[in-house]
Length: 250
Length: 289
Ligand SMILES: Nc1ncnc2c1ncn2[C@@H]1O[C@H](COP(=O)(O)OP(=O)(O)OP(=O)(O)O)[C@@H](O)[C@H]1O
Ligand SMILES: Nc1ncnc2c1ncn2[C@@H]1O[C@H](COP(=O)(O)OP(=O)(O)OP(=O)(O)O)[C@@H](O)[C@H]1O
Ligand SMILES: [Mg+2]
Ligand SMILES: [Mg+2]
Image (cartoon, rainbow over the protein chains, first blue to last red):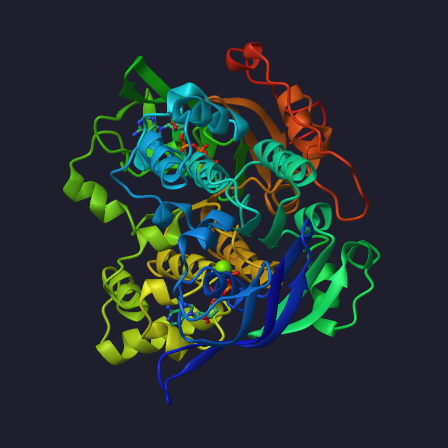
């Protein structure tokens, strides 16, 4: 479903150039759920943004369902097929558009009919009642905004969903509901996920395989079983697993 | 001077909506000492609003009332904006849940930190720059010089969070309200950032309100925890006793956590009860706190 080969992504010009992703390669099969974890600033969001066409300074090979993409141009079929939930839901929601407008615009754009009943269903799926339909982003809590962003991504009925920290602003009970919903959709519709998260338990629960990143490079790709069994190849991965077991007072 | 840095009684925050007034916070009371006080609870339960109300940051038409809202015995409720501004970012700082949104998008990171610091410190530009770079390094930013000159959209989610923390700690506040301050940080960076807050509480007697949905983290990092549901505090516990929680809502939260050590097919979800909205607050279990 997704092929990323030898991907480099850079920002700015030399000498001040920053190479944020260096030679990243991975494949995600149709119906698979793939995790991206690693250091803050290691290039995880950058990879997702390059795939969706938000960055044009990259080289390498990106293919979605066998079709190569170039630069930052993406056509309508691409956006029908691929949707992204951003790490920063506030910035990705237009401040003057109500929840209703955000969802109905996406549904229209994808040529859907029965908009009204779809909106009701989407809101229900992400655990937001009717009362939220005509609210604006500033009238929502952090987790409620994130759920609107998830509903918008689901509205297009994509095949590949890129999820950047989709539940980091959610309390664990709502997180459980969203993760169950994503698991159901994957089973029922064969959706493919690439999911960035700092929470190894979430990644272990949701993903079949995961890549560990540090300083712009993929340091290893492992299975969720290996993660659970603490079978890491790279020292960095071992540290990460160790640190996620608990916080110790200084 | 009282023992409590912050004292809140019967705090209420409400908003007009199409279907009448909506009460986001419904009679919250607590005291904060020189401690790490965790606040957990469901999305939309009023955690951020409680923090914003303390800082006078609830925007109209939102309305805030309280029988008491004090910092070190000084009233904070309905202070003129000019005085509130001096307290905000001076004596009380808040790390917002949306750090990148709270940063000024058209000013470099370095300038924003310097401005925050110079509001409360006299220093030359060179000194202030040095101090800002040190603060970025302290929150584990790998290349402080680059980030100093970057604009907020040029930094990652977790870097934005750390920049906000550095800025909020710059004025050396008496109280820090940290709203999901580490949700975008990998665990090793998170540990370092928590150590910084830890030291400020221990060595300088800062009071910390730590809003988080990470129950394991709260139970390990904090001293005491308040659990909020639908705008009220439903349970109070010593942090180390979080796993002995008695309220069905708190127990439900604990059960819905994914686990790293074993596979579960489906995560447990909460069956919310209407009675939780009104029930009296559960005190700590015997022997606790
Ligand atoms: N528009 C940009 N201009 C310049 N540098 C950028 C830009 N966007 C990202 N970067 C840099 O690229 C690096 C990788 O950022 P990225 O957002 O991909 O990290 P991340 O792995 O998602 O981190 P986090 O877990 O903190 O969100 C960072 O050093 C960041 O400062
Ligand atoms: N301007 C507003 N008008 C109406 N309701 C509002 C407004 N701002 C916030 N609310 C509501 O107030 C409630 C409490 O919001 P708050 O931001 O405190 O939640 P929270 O506990 O921090 O949740 P989260 O964990 O999702 O961040 C929410 O249900 C939210 O929808
Ligand atoms: Mg990111
Ligand atoms: Mg909040």
